[in-house]
Image (cartoon, rainbow, N blue to C red; front, side, top):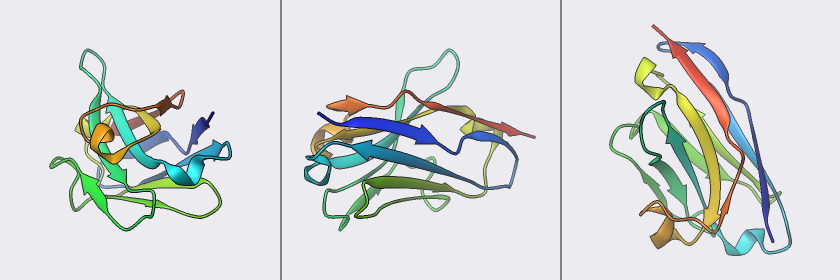
Length: 121
């Protein structure tokens, strides 16, 4: 069993930055790849970024490539550094743990509760 808790969301201005964190508990954390997803009001949840269990490979949605960076450490934390934020990035952001092939298709074994990110123009 893995539990995920996100933090770091909030309000930012367009062009600004935020860093999201995801703290995981559970002995099997290191076995899972990690991902970030987001869901804007009235829209479906969409893939944002993922990182393999080893941290050796990362994947990004085209809409965030070059602006967002996903990383993880050995202390069961996963991060999403978000730079050059745009109003279109406004959404609830979810941390997820699963298998890399599934994460990239929007599938996850475990989900966090989400954290709100609001970007003002």
